[in-house]
Amino acid sequence: MTLLHLSLSLFSCLLLVLAPTFIDSAHVSDPELIVQEVNQKINASRRNLGVLSCGTGNPIDDCWRCDRKWEKNRQRLADCAIGFGKHAIGGRDGKIYVVTDPSDKDAVNPKPGTLRHAVIQDKPLWIIFARDMVIKLKEELLMNSFKTIDGRGANVHIAGGACITVQYVTNIIIHGINIHDCKKRGNAYVRDSPSHYGWRTASDGDAVSIFGGSHVWVDHCSLSNCADGLVDAIHGSTAITISNNYLTHHNKVMLLGHSDSYTRDKNMQVTIAFNHFGEGLVQRMPRCRHGYFHVVNNDYTHWQMYAIGGSAAPTINSQGNRFLAPNDHVFKEVTKYEDAPQSKWKKWNWRSEGDLFLNGAFFTPAGGRASSSYAKASSLSARPSSLVASVTGNAGALYCKKGSRC
Picture 1 (cartoon, rainbow, N blue to C red):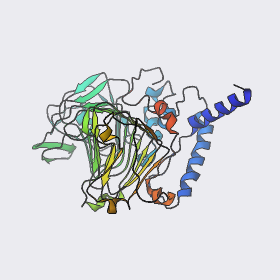
Picture 2 (cartoon, rainbow, N blue to C red):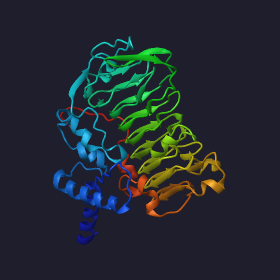
Picture 3 (cartoon, rainbow, N blue to C red):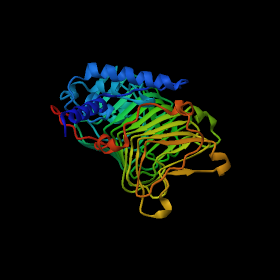
Picture 4 (cartoon, rainbow, N blue to C red):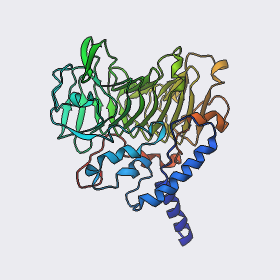
């Protein structure tokens, strides 16, 4: 390799590492605004990042994982979000709450030191864990606004019982948690704030259920084997980023949009980025209704029926993903258009741009390819699909040791 080629290669790598490319979650009327903000953020990151030796090209991870003192700067994570959920600050402006007790014996009068006691408080809180623990929730964990659940530094599992519900609240971050084997619960009283509890009917058994929630970020979680969905967002939820998660062993993975007739979901915007859709998955990665969905730089290594589907004319912008089709020739197609004849779905806006298709995988597009059609479904700049392995290589809950890079 000549010196010129080496210099160009290094320069290209630096650009990939440096570019965090954040985009506002508000609707974008002019696609050029996206380019302008991307360039501004690239230049800002060049000034602020400084040391590049631990950079991966994943803009979220490169924002905080280089810091050996991450445990002393935990709340800085809130400034690293990207995509439509980038304004989810969680408990950034509040105190640290340390969970010391994994029990969940009383959903109405939770014991101080438990996760349930932490998430229902009215004030902003950044919730961490004193040690490794398995939390089996008696009933749904109803979160109050401005909360972060941060599992870094401990091996935390929410498993074997009910799981997390984000209902009519805002500014939620869920990071670094293993959530699996969630069960249906309900027909019980559950507290959702210090001053209120109410009767809950049967829950679906999702790992994370977002119901009328906004500014929500689910990052670096390992999710599997739940009664219904792994991450579902319905009933007018919006401004959501689902990133860096490792999803496995599940049928209906991700539902975005309540029903074809529920038109309030037309304003939904969700970014799905840097996730690994792994072994044992069947379908809905995601399944979308109405709304605008940016599916970018994910690694799809397993599906049994299809990867990305939808109904009710959602706009789906698939960029820089890697799709490895199953060996069964019947299920090579990435996409599934549901509940509409071709004469209707061919007018929807679904595009594939820069995706990598392996083992016969293919994406059936719909509508035009004009950038203006996808402005509301564009939330960050995609890396080349050849980099998907590196930017998703650490998907899922991380092993973080104090005093070391995470």
